[in-house]
Image (tube, rainbow, N blue to C red; front, top):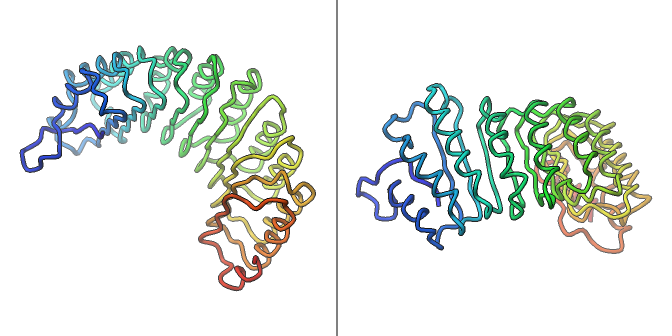
Length: 326
């Protein structure tokens, strides 16, 4: 359910007012499993936004609710220009901190509030054993925020299933901080990690390669879409994949300007251990031509079992490349 920001004007029967939605949450209504709190930019009239009383009621309802599985907070840029808005948001998270039933939490667009929010949510992230997925995308994550987040996640009883940090401006320095903390508690590494649309680069791939070959880290899916990864970074990743004891379930390295030569070098390394090629691969939105897909097809044909998924969309090989691949 998308939490409405306004009272229904009566023109639509299927739109619930804020008060109606809050009442359902307060009553632990079993029909509500997902709640999205979408706060728009400041060009929306102030009286159309959640006010102090609504934030307080929402926080109290989320703290006590036992039927929700997912809560998503999407805050648009510029919402925190007014000081009391900041206090409302932090108060809401403080109240929600008591919930121990959520499976998935999203925090988008907190930016300068992120460090304070993560401090407040530290007990929730550590002690909610049911939590299996955290999405902190679309926040500016620096070393301070990464340290707070990973410290909490590595102190859990069980690891997360999924950690998603897309569009967070993560660079080499921040990535090193993340992996350093994971190396201290390798069994707490999430099974699925998405770091799409960041700035990891080739040197970052070297760090990720070390994580991939660590036998104490049981990574299953890795998403590195659009991370300025070149030929050297791809080779680091391929060498690590071929040195693992078991194959990744999924690898996504689309939108990295990969050329034919890059893909050929990547698959050439994996050709020595075809069984360790990930079962799901995405190379879409690269500069792959006929030669690249021909090499890809030859290497994949050496596997005993076919891939479960292969994405090559928005590349340059056309029908000639399709024929070469088949």
